Length: 89
Image 1 (cartoon, rainbow, N blue to C red):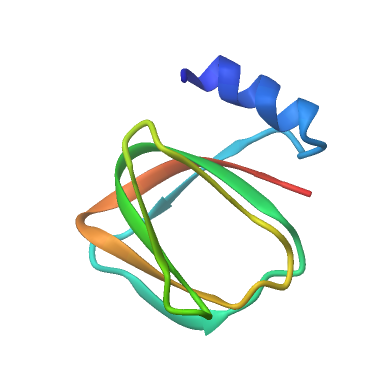
Image 2 (tube, rainbow, N blue to C red):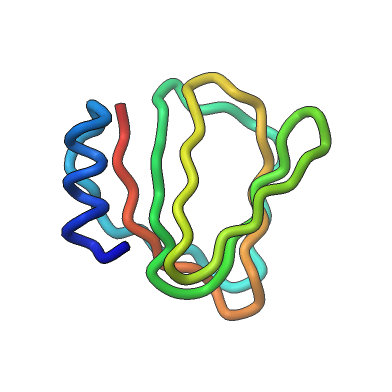
């Protein structure tokens, strides 16, 4: 999926237009929630999201991932950092 197709998918899913976000190499954020749903497409690098049940979703370049609002999760960025397109709703 390319960026234009992902932007269209965001629009169809009720998300705001995607914006680019970057996170530093090896960044870690302990378990937290967001008051918004988010859908991402990784542009470069890698990020892993650990959910409350212990399952881990790892996304690399080209992968997409969505998480509803108020879902507890932790985030771990790979050694090269991560750059992704994110839409919120």
